[in-house]
Image 1 (cartoon, rainbow, N blue to C red):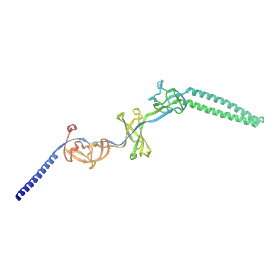
Image 2 (spheres, one colour; image 1 turned 90 degrees about the horizontal axis):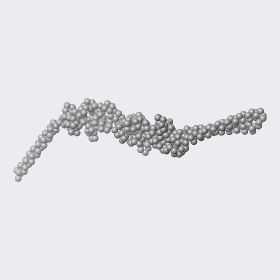
Image 3 (tube, helix red, strand yellow; image 1 turned 90 degrees about the vertical axis):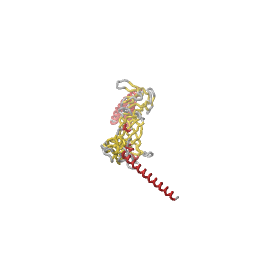
Image 4 (cartoon, rainbow, N blue to C red; image 1 turned 180 degrees about the horizontal axis):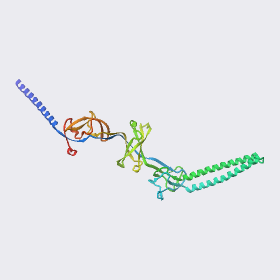
Length: 378
């Protein structure tokens, strides 16, 4: 029995030695095969370019200036038309373009002309009355000084002259008011712009203060956005911005920060920032939803690589692979600005080196590589 156990122990021991030797030999063989394995990769030459640090916000397109043109006099809208450059009469409708000072409506013009004529006649009448009163005053004063008139007569003559002068001044004030009313009965556009809303039709009665049309200056448009407090120190007047709208999805409109409000919103703790841009093509309309990109920092002539070629970075340091003499070399890098699918490399790469941009997930430091085209790898 003891001899059998010894034989069994020896068999087990020899088996374990053999298995250990076999796995060790196999592992070394696999490692050698791994070292000899050639990994196909695609590379690009490291170059320099520009990259931007941005803040993305949203807002609404607004006209630079919006004016409600209201009537300063009451009456019937006799005309709601403009005279075109060709001399033709054109009805005022939404979308029509106006020039500053251009006539667009007339309110009861004949009525105000008649009022002006009546007041003007009253002024001339009061001038005659005043002249008569002045002559009478001079005559009575002369008689009083000569002893032929009483002081009471002199006082009455002087009072009558003063009343006549006051009556003339009131008539002149009424004349000035009638002139203003006549002038204001012809309504002109206060700005260059486009009629966005017509509030009344020709023939309607309006009161003082009733809106006739709304005119918007859209040669320049603006977007007001709310910027988080933590970015407040990065926003300055004049800094560049980019705007996108859904209507022109493939186009980027260049703009600038026009103003930064001096105080924060106490409820949201955000800063209101106004951005303006040229709209001479009249493509942007008030009310359009806008995506705003504020460019807070621009780096030029720096190393910029595709973001997906940078590995690690969460637990270990970020790194990339470069190709040199058929060997992949792992490079620890430091990152700068990240913009969309690109990032800046501040340390670890030099222009002219061959950066592995495809196949890097199969690499280890020192592995042999073969440079191929992207379609060959696929």
